[in-house]
Amino acid sequence: MRKDRKIQIEENKKNFSIKSMYFNRYLLVRYIIALFFFTNIYWLISLLMSSSPLFFIPLSLMLILLSSVAEQIKILNNHTNQATNTKYCFKVLLITNVLLMFLSSFSTTFTHLYPFLINQMKSQILVLSILAIEVLLSGIILYRLHQIKNNEDRHYHRIKQYEEIMQT
Image: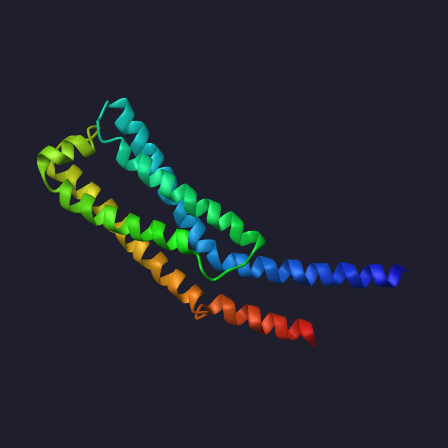
């Protein structure tokens, strides 16, 4: 009985290890989700403190990000390559940030979107830089999700090698 127990423990370790490896394919995605979520929290708080009527923008983005977080939690238990909510989330973030870049270049809109900043060229450059970084990160994540969906990422090949080793 003791030998059977050891075999079962080893099998559980192997299964957990493989499950963790599949889940870690989305590690970069989860870090960027967290970054965007906290960025939007700070933006929302700043808009609320400034009594800006545009507080719904970061609030909406946060709700969309939460749907992606829920999907990531679900992926832990049931691995899938189809992260549809996460893909949708980053498409919305990409489009929103491009629109914000366009809107931020107008002085009247800039003061409504970022009432906590002084409407100067330095502030506009800072905001445009941050939005450009967010656009770039959204594009990188969409590409990463495409790779995961098609099993073209490096992690997938490592997982398959590990599974082959474990079967021998």
